[in-house]
Length: 216
Image (cartoon, rainbow, N blue to C red; front, top):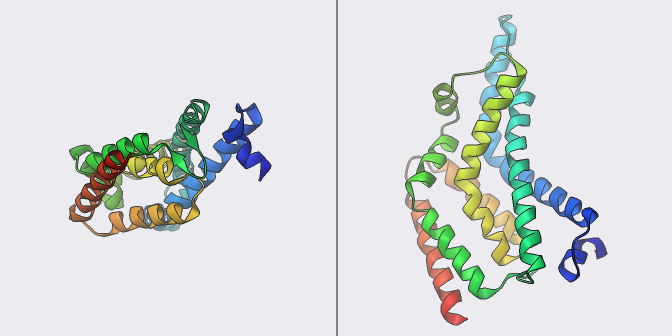
């Protein structure tokens, strides 16, 4: 407990940064694993078919490694943002950022939910097989499979970064919100081509952000 709370009370040490980075990385894996499972299952199925025919094919683990590396890079950025906000006394891990800044974050997240870039990234995450075909198909060697996994991870980051930013508002260590956001990300990827869910969430976030600003 002391190690977890230490960054909020004093300047971060190297150990504090490493601890928080590990926390972010583990949290991102836990939150994204359910939604990337369809992609991994499709990739594994094709790998088994290729193996039975004696064709060269990189194992699914290489694709998954590339995907996780992309989210590890995101975790480093998130940790750096947390360090900067805590250093400026604008954030504590349990209670989140100040109401005024929190309102701005929610509005930005809500607006992003309604953008074309969000739609493009979400489409790539919703259609695993189509994504693979549009990006050169399945890969026979490990490095190419890792690159494909990293590309998919980047699209998923483009889809979800604004939702992840909500954690800075509600509390980075609030496990209920972590679970709720992870569930929404999964649902958003499963509902198909309709963007109604994303738009409704966007409007809700904008309204919540405006309320926080006005209440402050």
